[in-house]
Length: 260
Length: 266
Image (cartoon, rainbow over all chains, first blue to last red; front, side, top):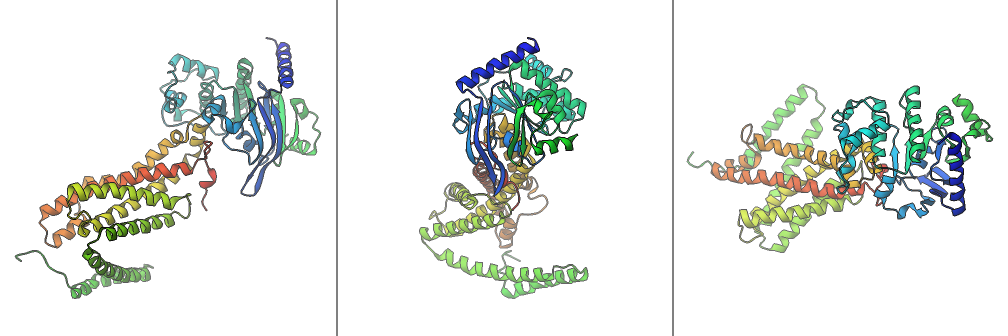
């Protein structure tokens, strides 16, 4: 599929979604208030299946707090959040989180080998069928970890390798959505771009919906398709990634000026 | 001395104060700032234990099961309150009820087994056995539970990211926190297990020393001590597992979310 075909396909998908009102996520007037502090304030947002959306904003603007609502790691204190047209509280939470994978800012590996880390879901999902080493290696290959031994102690991996391992672990759940909470914040520029490029490729290959928190406009410009700019817990701007070239709000202008 | 039993008199106890005088001299010599606390401790030991002696004499004269059961329940409530107030820096919802309930279950099972099948007491609430053994179970259970809960809070603070990562993969809270639970119980049990390894080699346990001093045949004292060692470890294990099984749930919402606000110190 060429790039042009891809965008036409996306457009058709978007139209179908809009006609059927068939959004993947529908956020309606979401707020989150913790001990009197307003973290999110009146967020309304629709996300379609297959989008690559970036949540951009200065630190403390509520990006991560918003991201954590999408897999139910936190709940809104007001407003409604629908996933596949159904209230998120109504979902079987284990099933929801298998469908909505998350990669955190700091990669977490548990004590044990690379294999133990990859098949960690077997600890609580006794019914899933065993995954062969070949499948595990194929998944590692997908995230660009070709030369890793499955027996290796996962804690001896480098930061970038751990983050790829974390990504592979999520992919093994065959998610529909991938939440990325600044997964490359602790990595150098080149490595960060390599990893996100891989994510963008997976997004296209698997029609994976990606929601990525970032404070790096270069990364967002390069890989995301849509940007939601947050300022003090509210959406200041929302549009295709091109809005970064012509910001309309003073907040986004100020933010981009500061980041460049 | 024909019989090793010697009934220590109050005069003898007063003479034992010489030991405390020696301690005072030593800490004054090194100018250790502990004099006042030590003085209060010396007086409190004397007063509390004397009162306890009179109280026990009174209790032991009671031939009434309701009285004995009531007494054990009061001991449980006092211990639960003590444990609850030690946990103020990290309040856990319903912690008092969790402690009291776990202690009650442990006491019923362990004390019941000991009185009925080991000591064959007659009547079953025989005060000379019931009160001191209940006291040991409750005291040891409280200490162990405090250790394990403190360790558990340390563990979830330390493993917060790991727990959230596991939850985000779809793990139920129990699976996400399993390693923290195991580590906490293990850490709290270790002193008890170590005591089993060295008992009798390095020092004689307090209960056994007391019995031998009061003229009991060492072989009988030893049999009691063996039972007590087993009782300690069982009590600690039961208490730790019961308390943690109830405590860990307080750290999660029904939506399988970690209540991160509970991890921060008050």
